[in-house]
Structures are given as structure tokens and as C-alpha cells.
Image 1 (cartoon, helix red, strand yellow):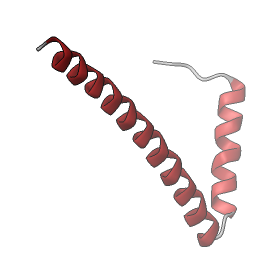
Image 2 (cartoon, one colour):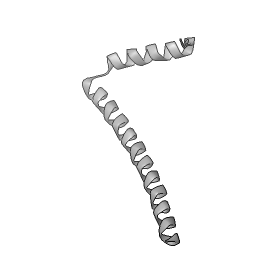
Image 3 (cartoon, rainbow, N blue to C red):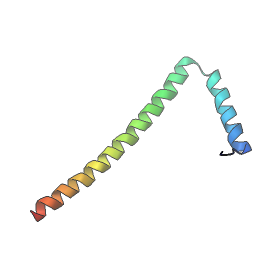
Length: 64
């Protein structure tokens, strides 16, 4: 089992304490910001995939 050091445990405790003191609106805002960050990351990954696939098709089109 992975052991946690003191700083990790302290950071988690502070995070848990902060979350209990937030208002509903603040929690919603945090969740929305996290969702937007993840959507941006997802879009970046999809764009990279499209570029690679497009390059493959262009390469095939040139050789055929």
C-alpha cells in the first residue's frame, strides 16, 4: 500500500476543511471551473488526434 507523507495528509485535511466551509455557489463555481479545464484538455487531445489522422490521409493520398 502506498504510504502518504505528512505534507500530503496535511494538504488533504486542509482541502477537506476548505470544502466544508464553502457555500453552495462556491462549490458550483469550483466544479464548473474544473469542468471547463477538463473540456479544454479533451478538445486539445481531440485536435491532436485529428491532425495526426489528417496527416496519415494526406500521406496515403500522395502515394496513391
